[in-house]
Amino acid sequence: MLFRVGVENNFEGRSIAWALEHPGCFAYGAHGEAATLNLEGALDKYAGWILQHEPRTWLSFTPDEVETVVDGTWDVYYINDELDQVSEADGYSVNSFFPYDWKPLTAIEIERALKMLEWSRADLLKTLTGLSDEKRNAVYMGERWSINGILGDVAGAEWWYMDRFGLAFPRAELPEEPLQRLEKVHQHFNSVLFRLADVKKVIGVDGEFWSPRKMLRRVLWHERDHTDHIRKLVAI
Image: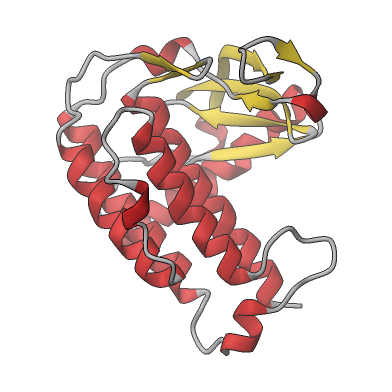
């Protein structure tokens, strides 16, 4: 089974391989080749995750059937407010946009994505089971955020992705409480996604290209990645 891969280099000091046809499936590596190799294991785990929730899964294969082909490569770079390319210390990152991101989302892809968004959110909330306020607000050495800070970032990023398309509600309406913020943004994103089937639209905002497919790719990645992050903090 052939899987198209997008490789994003210089992403926070490492590379990330994206399974372009399967939003929410990704793998990290020290460089592009390592990330692509690691994606093979991530695909198996991802297919198993779907099967846990969907007995009649839309993704089934055996490990020896996996074949990957790099369909696009992107090197992250940095720009300032004037859109001039600058050093990492002086700007903000412009993240990957692959040729495959131009493809509009189909109705069946959105139907599947809505299911995965629900499973992903359930996985995230499960990590919080039994956690005290003290644990959720604890500061961990070497970490940018507390667990509550991570939850706020998940919701804030999801809102920001929608804002790239002018589809977000006013920023002032974002709740301060992390779980309320997560729920409000999540429900709004689900309603927005319904409207993006077959939309052939790519826009440039603040020096970066965005499409519905890229937006979905990053929403599912961001939540699943931070869910794993929280699991590690809970175990400390």
